[in-house]
Image 1: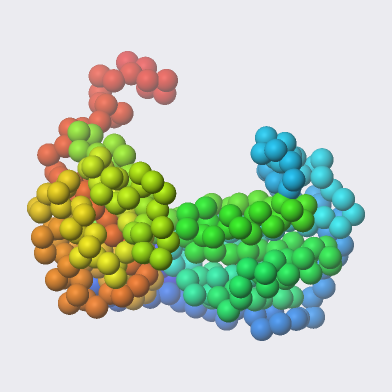
Image 2: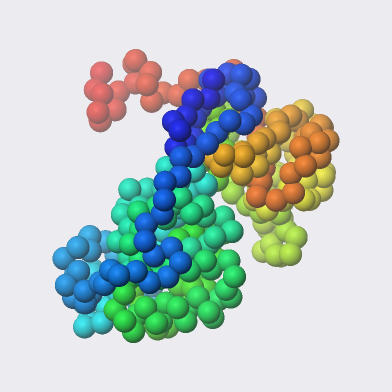
Length: 332
């Protein structure tokens, strides 16, 4: 059975790859009251950033208008009078317990929070003490940058909270470009990806010896064109494990492009809102998955996983834990 605490956490399905015995629903989060500042200012006031310099942990921060190798500097070498840092924080796939300790700490300490409310649950912001909290789902890029510029003028750190891992389909590239032009330091805090959450839910490893040692993360070319050579059919020719984002509404076309390479009997899973309380999924083969997903009614916020790793139980064991295999930490 899939076991979870009342506050969540991605569980495992020991009888996977098709989640036998795993309840489809019944997951829940225990949401306590959010900290002050959810809707605006609070009585708390933050000191000048110079007073908080010692609290910033060692890491790398990037500045604009310099070659890439020169943009990465030590925070100790950049402490101007009105410095701040924009933290691009990966909130994870949905379950608030899947955010990293560092991400949670920064959310609770930054005086300004800008979060992607369409995919980031409010429970992720629990315990914050920010004086300004903004849902960026209603804003365009220029408005977001303007909020950051205002925080910079006031010497305030910003928690820019994205779903999943911000470096994957997080649209942080254009934000970073603006920050570099403005000379505003930033740091990216990684997050748990939707792909990882789906693999955990299904109880599978995505890289198995003799089956697939590669994972391709991609999206379906719909409104966004794909660079030459990254068309789905081209990627499918490798027959590696594949995670396809933003494609559930084009599932039939995806199946048609995958089938010549993977075969009609290839396992596939479509996971809707992985790790959220209302998560759901459909599993099958390329031959029947479209009908199953239609019956479920998935329309958005779903990830497609395809590959033989989802159902292969005949793979060879890796040498990592083989008794006769010696390595640095286990000499024979």
